[in-house]
Image 1 (cartoon, helix red, strand yellow):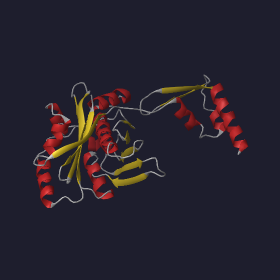
Image 2 (image 1 turned 90 degrees about the horizontal axis):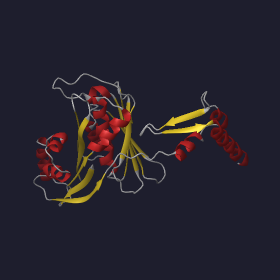
Image 3 (image 1 turned 180 degrees about the vertical axis):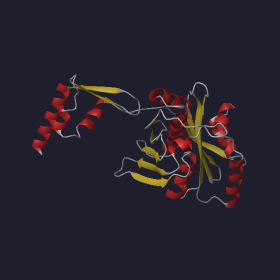
Length: 299
């Protein structure tokens, strides 16, 4: 079962979060039929969204991460709630690119090194906050760290990893860590953290060793006293519904709604996050269009 934890040093100088998203990424791969490299790209962004969503203080808050680079994978989107549950999609899931010389998946090539990372926080209190930064490498972890440094002035280390089987292309392990220096941290604490980060093992290596989320945070915060703030299970969760699709259709002019059905007299809407299909027949569309016309006349 996937799980996320948040920890803090007892002196209040460093915050560290760790998440395992192995089941989440496996679910995403089954839904979107991603290639090895797009599985890694989407998996990294899902892990980042879970970590960042879990940082939100409002119960119903939502965070949306979108990466749009100049690579062949196109746009990649991940959405998470304040519990760390998340969902996402990649525009071109079938894309494949050559591996790096060391044999590792080249996520940066698939995404592209030129483009934007957009972060939208919706706290349910008026207009959402939107921040954007230019991509550093397209490897996602570096780009998330850059976002925090530029948009929020918080020194951050973001480590993300997805292990994919070379033969079957199936995702095997996935997770991430987010380590942040908090206001008031002295130079000694920062130097100690820098030494730890310099020798920190890759996330998938730690997972492959059987390390827990607590173990991962302790390794990152070695030399500090640490306490766990909270922990919870996380899942791939989509909140689509027929009612949401109906509301989306209702934003169209009534005459356009009447033309949505195909030759068979039906319209199918498919959720881009979970793949679920919703079907509306001509009678349903006509009723919806008529209802909108009546509401417009009453205004």
